[in-house]
Length: 365
Image 1 (cartoon, rainbow, N blue to C red):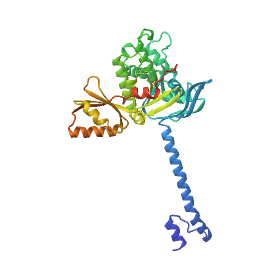
Image 2 (cartoon, rainbow, N blue to C red; image 1 turned 135 degrees about the vertical axis):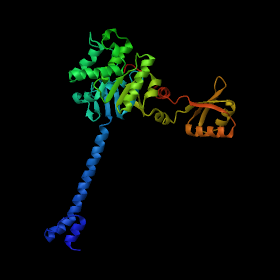
Image 3 (cartoon, one colour; image 1 turned 30 degrees about the vertical axis):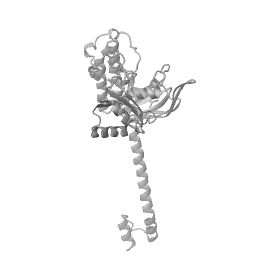
Image 4 (cartoon, one colour; image 1 turned 120 degrees about the horizontal axis):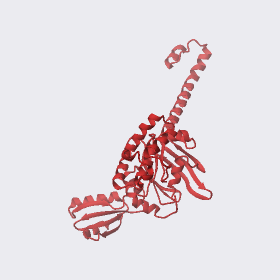
């Protein structure tokens, strides 16, 4: 095969080069092609990482100290879209994490970014972030409508657009009827809702909500939780701190459990619970012969406790391997030895994990 044919076979048009140059070109062009391919792959990887970063809230080895007092220490978090709840006793570090996300505090060490935006760039950050503080403080003399629209105007929104966004926010929190009343005349629950409306009025993609359910009656609380779920379904980040554990458990996609400035567990609540292998899961079985079932299950090496319910109509079992235990119950039912009415995990919820991992009391967050 002539040099020209070799060149065309490899995809290079080099037949017009001198013979020595053609030989050199044959050797070097594949290397250049490989190098260009490697560069392209590297750029694609960097782009993928950048895209992932642009969709998450990231804490990279973050610590915050107030003088010698610890706020949070060595926090590494990647928070995806959805509802993420920060849970812990007073002084655990929940408010510190929120203030770091909003840029109200700077980290002593490490870096925080929100959808790829460093938190020390407030003009860019607050185009994306809405923040509802736990503090009940308002400018004097304003109505609910004026409160929201005035902050939208300060935010740089044109007057007509600010009016439209104000109405949308008021409708979302069901305060249209009270929009033109003075905030000073609002109930505690209404003040909580108008703060929430102000935080969502500019239609952010990240909502940071400090104790947003405080002061709400049961019906409004249920409506607010439904609103949070809608935000999450639309792809927003909804970060919530709360002490109302059963509601956090009910609405959260993931939880971050804190104690004394440290993250002690994070992730899907059931996944966190499954990782607590040293803490047995407690299950209540309602059946017609609990004593017989107790003797049967207690022979299993993964069962650490079996005791009758006080009404003698059920059995509490503690097991280190819930999957094996459920398979055991399937065999019991199949053999017809015991009629089982119901099976329910007693502590497969946030409150149980919370009490187990961070069952201490602290000062102020």
